Image (cartoon, rainbow, N blue to C red; front, side, top):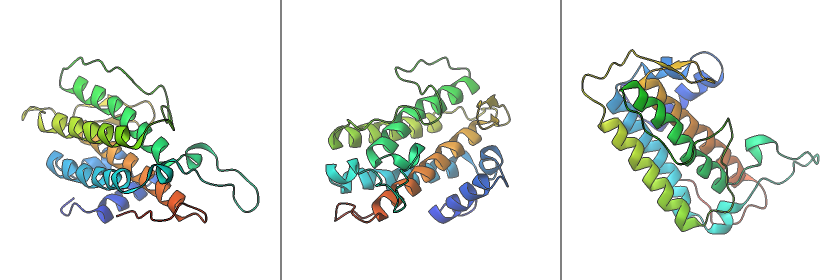
Amino acid sequence: MADVTIEALTQAGMRVARGESTPEAEGRRSTLAELAAGLRLTRGRLQAIVDGWSQEQLLARPRAAENGTAAEGEDRWSATEAISHLIVTENWYLLHMGRLVGRRERFETMPRGLGDQARQDVPKAELSASLAAATRAMLDAIAALPPDADLEAVRDSTFFGDLSLRGWVMLAIIHDLDHLRQIGRVAAERGFPLDAVIQ
C-alpha cells in the first residue's frame, strides 16, 4: 500500500467484505510501518469521536427502522458499545501477535467470541483514556517487533483464517473501519442528538 489513506484502507476492507480478498492478503500488500500508520489513522478517527461527542451522543443507539424492525447485532450498538468492544478485542490481536514472536502474555480481559465485550456503561472520560491506552499498546507492540521477526509465520484466527503479523494488524484496521461505518450510521439517523460530527 504505497499511499496510507483512509480511502485506501476502506477499499481494502471492502475487498475483504465482498469476499474478494482476506485480511492476510491485504496485510501482505503493506509493510508493518505502513500498517502502523493505517492503524494510527483509524484510531485517530475513533478517538476524535470519543473526544468530540457528548456522553449523550456516545450512548445513542439506533432507533427502530420505519417499518418497525429493530436493529440487530452490532447494528444496535452505540458508539460507546462499539468502541469498548474494539478496546477489548485488541487483546486478542496482541495475544496472537505476541505468540508469533515467542511471547506468552496474559491479558485480564479477552473476548469470548465475535461481538463480545460491548459495554454501554463506560463514562466518556474512561472510554477516551482506555482507547488512547489501547492504541498506544498496539502501536508499541508493532514498534517492538524484532527486526528479524518472521513475517511469513501465521496463527489460526478461528474466524478469519491464518494470519501473519501483518494480517493481524490489517484485521485490527478493518475492524476499526467496520465500527467507524456502524457509528456513522448511528450519527446519520433522524433524532440523533445534535452537534455530532465525524471528522
